[in-house]
Structures are given as structure tokens and as C-alpha cells.
Image (tube, rainbow, N blue to C red; front, side, top):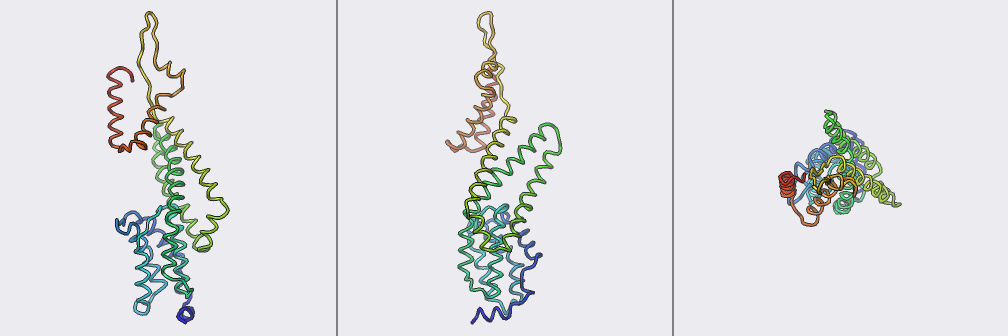
Length: 285
């Protein structure tokens, strides 16, 4: 009966508009990390993104006092996901469910909370892989190459491209998924297409990082060994074994210390400085 009554009073003015969606999207992508709470993680940001939505769906604060309280309570719960690339996709689905709930569709608060909880882990894995491990390194490698050549366009490209990833790709998916709702998420994970795209993206990211390391890590030996009347240039010997073996070795050493020995980046940086100083003093580098 309550649902039927809600359907009767629900009108077009209470439906979410493009402006409402834009405000929720901008709030989330801009402040998801700025309002971090160790108890609720990104919960405050999610609740903040819902404020204008709540005012649209439940415009009369006195009449819909209970609905407003419940809406804020369920979005202040613990929540944590990748905020920029795939986080808005979850937001779109939740907004679609909130609109349906306000229209009288039998959706419980637990359904919305369960959807958030169920999606935040998988979508975080997808977002981190595509954004941090693939798109950002590719953009960064191009920007670094331009910067090292003396071009001011390098840092500008990085900033513009990063903003494009954060507010461009995600916004397109955000609007699409709001229209499709829960079914849109099912389409993303069905058919194995997502796994294929992620495999391709991860491979491209790995190749990009490898190319970036090869072009930016510089290390050579200036040592010369006297063999009687002959002299052997150590760097030439290394080049005959594997071209670029010294930069490759320092890269693998860095990865080993970071991943296997859990060495902090600060300690690792200091260690590399010490290695460089000692190498120069003994005449090897």
C-alpha cells in the first residue's frame, strides 16, 4: 500500500535531472579522497554526493523526514573504491536505484547498501588496473619523454590527459549506467569481455613501463681495466653481453627491494644515492 501511495504522489519534478547528475558526479570525483574517514573511508563523500539528490527526490523536508534520514544513514556507511575511473559507475547505479525507490519501486535500504558493497571491490580492481597501472603510466611516459627533451608541453599534457581520464571517460560511463541501472553493471561483467580488455590493458601498461624505464634510467660504467699493453673498457664488455644491462640491473634491484624486502621508497632512494656516490668514488660509474 505504501508503495502504491508513493507511486501516486511521485511526479516528474522529483525525477533526477541532468544538473542533479552532474552535481553528484562532480562532488564525488572531486571530494572522494578529500573527505576520507578511517571509520567510514569514502562514506562521507558518498553522502555528500547524495545531498542534492535527496533534496530532489524528497523535496519536502517535513513530509519526507524519515526518508531523508534513512537515505543519509545508508550512504554514510563504510564505503571504499577507486574514486575516479570506475567509482562514478557505482554512483550511477546507486542514483538509479534511489530514484526508483523514491518512485515507489520495492527497493529496501539493504538492497542499495548491498549493491554498493558488492560492487566496490570488483570495480576498484578494474579502476586501479586500468587507470593507475595502464592509462596514467602511458600518459606519464609520453609526458616524461617530452619533458626530458626540453618541451614545456610535457607537464601540460600530463595534467590535461589526467583530468580527461578522471572527468571524461568516467563521465561517459556514469551517464550511460544511470540510464541502464543495475542491468548495465551486469552487461559489463557478462561475456568475459571485461577480462579480455583488462588483460590487453595490463599488457599495454607493462610494455609502456618497460619502455619508459629503458629510456629514462641511465647508468653506464667508466671503468677501464689495464691488461698489460691492452685496455678493456668495461662498458663495452657489458654492451656485448646485453645492451643496457646496467640500467636493467638497477631496475630489477629496485623492484626486488620494493616488492620482496618491503623497503620504503625513502630508504630505497637513499640506498640508490649511496650506490651512485660509491660507484663514482671507486671509478666504476
